[in-house]
Image (cartoon, rainbow, N blue to C red):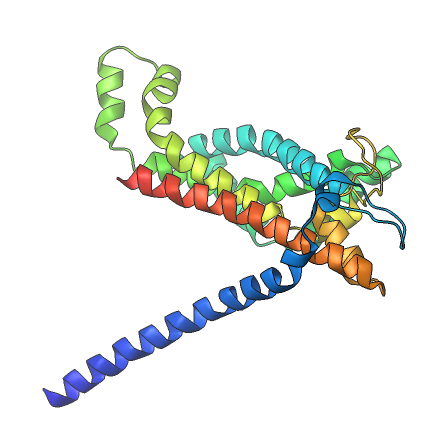
Length: 274
């Protein structure tokens, strides 16, 4: 009995230690960002575009670019992913359903830089130029697997009795799905959507081959467009301290956006489970 109690306490202690070890890197990252980024936060950072060295510039064009590119990515990925997830959940025995599920998992395992190169061949070369639209397509491809998985899991958790009750009242498949299934599955789907959004917000590699970057404020999605990850990458690797400070400030803004979306996602999960 003493040996068993000793092993139990040792196991619990190991769990606590390794749990703390997983939390420590997060706090180190946050402390570092706050230490260097808080001093870089000012009105110039969010009200001015990029400027040459020696002139006071900011990250307004990159912030706007991030919002535009990620919004378009969500608009592209959401309907495709949700409809695919509904098909996989409702017709799991169909051959196309199985292929869709496997393909979704395979896309999730493809490195982001490879997706960027593929979209470069698909969009940038035929269009003969970098564009925000190409960047949005690359990020949309990265969003699809997570949203499909969230949709499938959300629908599978709904009892079959709901479908049978709807069908017994004369509702067809379309009406049952839209009026009965989707309202119950919507919180879980939105959670997956927000999680995917927070993931792509910080992606740099696909944008290097697609949207490329732009030092000016641009709203044309068929032209090159900057984004916070691109600005951070370019400024952090430069030899100028002024640009380093802007990179730290932009990093803190990006993390705040990701955290805000992540917190919203987790609150949605808790409400959904409740």
